[in-house]
Image (tube, rainbow, N blue to C red; front, side, top):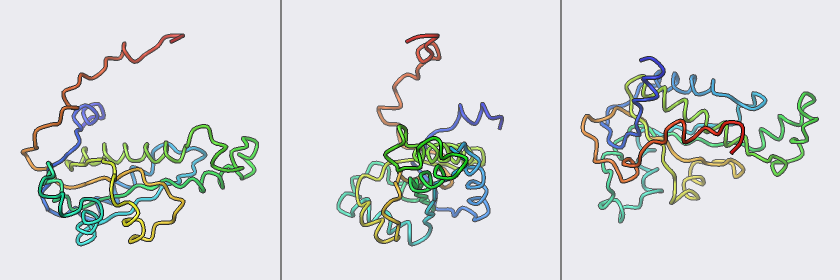
Length: 200
């Protein structure tokens, strides 16, 4: 697909088959995501990739069994891959302590950053990965981890300073998606509603 077609046709996928995703395909997605913009080329993000029994344990941590029967998107649970993007603030503080960046003052600590570029850069990488997955015919869904993060982090041994942005379900989409939620009915803003020329 042309890039514009990828962007215009990409949707969040909430219904997957349980067909596995080849490791080479996953590596290709991450390689493309690694080329997203990165402040100081810090590349301070990590991706914990869960497959097989680890996916089931992820859902045990984040969607308890007593809530699962009423969960609207049952076929989301079929996704064979759950990827967890973590941003690393310490990597940015360390990078901006080096001689070529020291004059910025951003190496003094995470609280010196007016914008948390670790979250920005990780978000860039996630968006690149979502587009790359769609271009290969895969489905993907980025979603928040509202429950069970402490249990999840403890079980996976994730360092405390890393910031979890959410989770990405990746797999082969089913032809029939569940009905879209209310948010999907909202109109997309037009460019002239977004652009402010010269002043607000």
